[in-house]
Length: 420
Image (cartoon, rainbow, N blue to C red; front, side, top):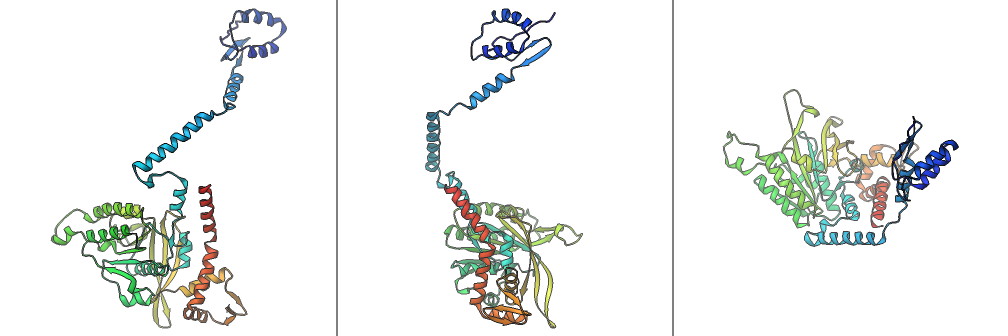
């Protein structure tokens, strides 16, 4: 015997649909059964079985969900919700400070921070934002005599061109004033100090950052930071690694101060071997623990590649700079540069190569055309650019406009979206 098993709560509209699809000889039985069911409009059923076939209530559920989606928002509740949110944001500002204010506009203002050029257009392009970001910590590390101090001095030079004040903490006491002047650094407006301990050095950095008047602070180097306990103790005394603990504590404080400042703090660091298997990149470790790796927004590794010769004399070195970490743009980019002894980066050769690639300098007739002047050899062009700084600056500005035009448009569009 076939049994009809209904579930109470079936709507009359659903039963009408069922009746239309049931054969005529079975409608009477359904009618007599449904007369005993008390159902009202708006009540729904799950399912019932007849003749071994299942009639699901998915149609009813879908209609209910569609009905709920079509319901209009209560204007009063929305206004009450917005008022409560604004009250909570205002209370955050009162209880804490303006930094606790939540808005997308403040995020973009910190994301697109002002930058300081590095002195190399190739490196600025590899960094993605045209230089090193202000208000951040940067680490430059590598082996000995690889150009770490030269890169730091070029950054100081570029910051001084923009009218900023710079401080150089020569912890290693190896800075040469004649070399600094030969590179074009304004030594009259350069703050130089040699602190006697790691605590004093890091305290000076934090004080300069809180002053909000210094644009670039260079610490050269992390490996030479000696805690006071090691200075006062015996050489052969065994103690825990106080340098890494001190760096961890100091960088927390310096990072908090940088959030309210626009200073660029550069830590020059050295590398050591983890084992005696060989001195390669996978076997390197930097000094000062792991805190600097985490707090640094940009980490650059410098490697010396080759020696530059002019006839029988060694005039410089070729280096490779790899961006290991970059929180402002894609990382893991590599740039090859040349350093001339006693002068710094060979920027003329770099500018000439990039100007040729972007069509600013035309190579035609077996030579080079610059300012309606014809030069037959590459060395003549480099000498002309070295002697005429105004022409070099004009080429650099045109290259920057072409290289970083996309990034500037992205920043402007981001600010427009945040304001709207």
